[in-house]
Length: 357
Ligand SMILES: *Cc1c(COP(=O)(O)O)cnc(C)c1O
Image (cartoon, rainbow, N blue to C red; front, side, top):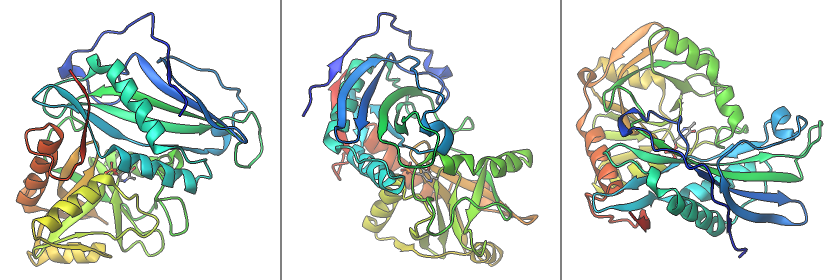
């Protein structure tokens, strides 16, 4: 494997106040970069200062959106290690997204090595409080200077790091969600299961309308019948009805979350009655009316578990679990966060130590 070269910054930044980090605003001193060219493959892996870079205005990514990304986190454990969670699973999904967007696959080991070197170099940016992390954003863009629709012959991969506070300003409190009945996010046969920018661009106007009505997020229904539940904003969704923990099955238009997988694995281990199946919005509203809807929560890397306290659909509203965090959401959050921050044992081999601090 090619040696990763390192060019250190001559202008080191300062670590912001941990309590004012917010999410996605600050970036560390360096980034990992690698290039691709047809015939040559991925080449020139390197760590360089985090700074602006040049592309021609004709670069294909600007015009046709051929791009993918990932989102994962590094944590500081109570015994002063920098650890990452299920990195290989995220990097394998990166390749799955690459397949969908006709972007050449990367070598998981090589990208992971680049990530670990980058984290080691910028470890002083790792915040320490519970709920804080370094958010890791790998992405690939199509760089051919060519205006015309085709697969690019050149690409650039980046990994950038963002020291982050807790994602939801309100903390671990239930959020209100608006069920979207006009717009759709993805359809079967489309690109809904890829982490690709176009899916997020497509979600913006629904998000704006939900915010306008005072809701934090949008719950997407299926694109054909507007009947079956798909997912929330940037999270997968779970419902607990009559002691059955239900999440929509992966059908090609839903993003297969790593946190979703973690939740399913834990809940099955705990002996819960777990289903990956179609679930309609009518079923959820009926369960709320007959008193069998116990909990609802989103799952995603950013917040791990995000309890849902209210759903609004076509002007009807339901309040879930008295707008309180339910026991299943709490237990899952405690288990995952405890594993990530090292206060609970890593029973599944999900955690890798990158470096001592
Ligand atoms: C990233 C993402 C998720 C959650 O996936 P995780 O791997 O758990 O972070 C769910 N839905 C969408 C649309 C996403 O982009």
